[in-house]
Image (cartoon, rainbow, N blue to C red; front, top):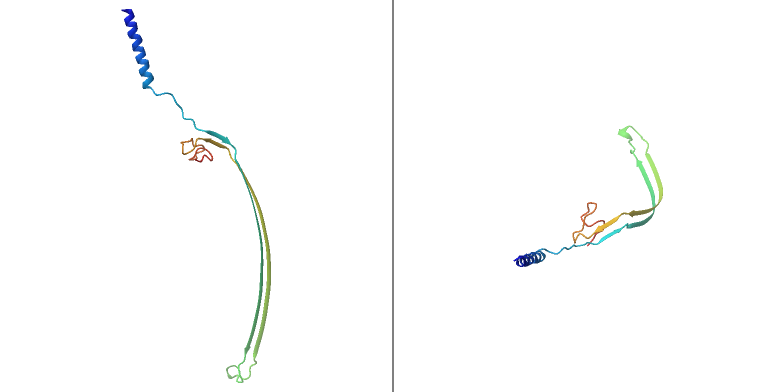
Length: 134
């Protein structure tokens, strides 16, 4: 009788173990690629501008006023008034502009997965790290 109880116990333990092994999912993990770096961006720009302006102006005026033989309001002879005005101006402007600019940017790069694969957003960015493109 002890042998029968022992056989039933072993049979129940085996059934329980088999049921547990079949009913529980296997342990698994989904690993995402992790990358680190320190990308650097360098930018050089140079601008040169040369401008030359020339202005030349000449103004010529001539005015003759004649009151006729009776003069002003019949008061007699009044002289004839003549005026000539000449004015000229010349201006020249030359300008030169030169600018050079150099920018250097370096930033840490940490990326775990990508945005398409549900990566971890670092620094509040919507993609996985600085430059975690998919």
